[in-house]
Length: 476
Ligand code: ADP
Ligand code: MG
Image (cartoon, rainbow, N blue to C red):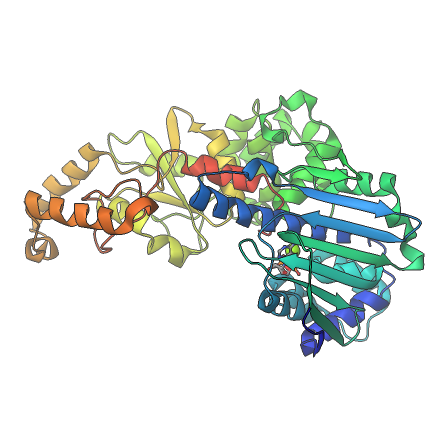
């Protein structure tokens, strides 16, 4: 069945492994979270493949199953996700691609000479991804077969300087990771322990997680539940999920008591000194956003405390929704926002072009979780909130802007842009539709774009899909 080959880990990986395996790490249990998170990522990728290639066939079978065996000292996690080819195993499991791990090593370099406690607390903060398996294992085996491929492989390492890869037969599509537990980690071969950990960290994974055949995770979206029925622990977990943080949200407790009076107090403070408030917001904004997303009763008030960058202000400044509303164009009834990675990505986004042209301000959000927050909020006072990924600027506002411009000076660029006749545009769109085939549902000519030649647009459910993706424990 082919032969086994041995490879050396990349130097950085070796360094990381050395720390991971030799640290007396208090929160070793996070390895469960990391492996479940990877399995969930792989399922999500498989779901996309299935949706695009097979119209969604079999997506309901996607799941993660963990089995533990105390007698064998084993912890096994299986997913029927995308799987990996041999090359992908070498690339993904042999090098540190993960930004979190790099940040971890950098931080560690800064703390050189410090004791173990500190190292441990840093590991907890960053999470070390797949390598965390070595905190509890003498040996780790990864069996994987990429979806659609015939050959499966087995990756094996003892967390020292090297790993081996060999062809393996009988490997199902997806990935199976076998941990041979260290004698000091046998607790993780107990069903009860594992169930508790999965519940603690992974209750937002949208795919079923089974432990020894029984379903463990809950799948209800927390933000759809009535606020009164949400426990503090659930709060904490959502916070961890959204924040990718592993500490507890100190302020959430206060929130429950931290609410009406505190909100009013904060609003007053912000009025007194916007600068001080923004400093506070840098540290605690996430918790306020959590409140907006989860606490329907208080969301309208809490929304006054939100701050976002925007197209109408300087790159490094933020604005409140009230201030946005005060700058709105006459006749505008919607607050527009765009979730993008950074200011530069946002301002150069094709979605933004038409809004820029129409002189309509757009809030910029740089985190995926803002999508949840703003979609949940849905309204601010009598204004709606909408993502510009799903709506275009109102025609009346564009027309008004154009009238105004005409009065001033005719836009040179526009005058020089050769426009297309209706027939020509029909011919072009039908040719594109034919060439792109099933990959698009329609191709239309639009006046929405200014500089970009084309844009991929979606129906109104684009945001919903993003939210669905967010409900999985995914690297943010
Ligand atoms: P991260 O998840 O942040 O990328 P990890 O160290 O957790 O970093 O995982 C490294 C990589 O290994 C992943 O990005 C993925 O490509 C691959 N990987 C890990 N586990 C699986 C899995 N169960 N299925 C498919 N690929 C996986
Ligand atoms: Mg990971």
